[in-house]
Image (cartoon, rainbow, N blue to C red; front, side):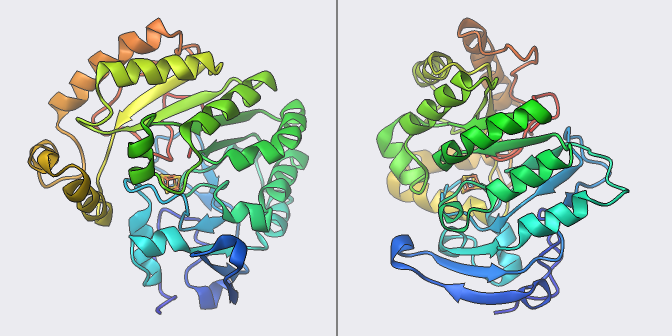
Length: 340
Ligand code: SF4
C-alpha cells in the first residue's frame, strides 16, 4: 500500500499518507463485520477551502476517510485511490479514522489567529457513519467548536446523530448550529441497492422530526436525484410530502453527478439492476460527469413547484437544481450554511 505523497484536495490535508499522519494500528472487530478501521493520529483537523470556493464556509473537518454508508453514487469515492485503495468496496469497508482529531481541533481553535469562521462537517464523508459509534469523535469536536465560539454545520445520513442531539441542542445556545439531513430515496429496493449502509429513509425522516422538535430548522438534501429512477413527479411529491410532514424547514434537490471512478461503480450497478437504462444514462451524461443542461432545467421545473406546494422553501432560497450543483455531501452556496 502506498500511503504517502498524496495530494488530496478534497480532504483536510491531515492525511498526506498514513506514515506521515501517524498510523497507529489496523482494527477489525466482530461488531463491525466486514469493516477494517485504520487508526491514525492526524497533525491537523481544520481544512481550509480553496480561495475560489463559492461555498458559504471556509473550513471543513473530516474525521474519517471512506464511508461505510456505501452509497453507489458517492462523489468522494475517487479520494480513496490516493491511499492506493479502490474506490469501490475499499471505500465502503476500509475506513481511516483520525482518532485524535478532537484534541488537535481544540488546539487549532485555541490559536489567537482563529477568526471563528463557520466550519462544515459532512462535506466529504459522513461524520455519523458507523465508525462514529465505536470512536465517538463527534462529541469532542462539537464541544471544541462550541467552547471556541465557532459556528458550525453538519450534513449527514447517519441517525447516530441522535445520540448527540442533547449536546447539539446545548451547543446551539452558544453558537449558530445548522443541521442538514440527506434523503434522496424512498423506495426500499432502491435504497438497498444504492445506499446499503445507510439507515432506512424512514429512520432519517424520524431524525428530521427529532431535530425539528429540538428546535432546529432542518434542511433536507434530496440529492442525488437519479434520472429515470427517482425523478418521477409521484416519487418526488411523496418524498417532499414525507419530508414536510417530518417538520423540515427547507429542501433542495440536485441531479446525480458521476465523476471519476464513481461513474464506473454506479454504472456497474445500473447494468445489473436496470440494464434497460444504460443507454439512456450514457446519452444523458455523455462522456462527462454531469447531466445535460436540458435535463437539469427539466428537473428544476419539476422540483420548484413541488417544494413550494410542500412549504419547503422556508429558508427563503431558491431550491432550483443547477446543472452542476453540489455533491451529495456539499451544500449549494445559496443554501443554508452547511452536508451528508
Ligand atoms: S454519499 Fe455521503 S453517506 Fe453516502 S457514502 Fe458518500 S459520504 Fe457516505
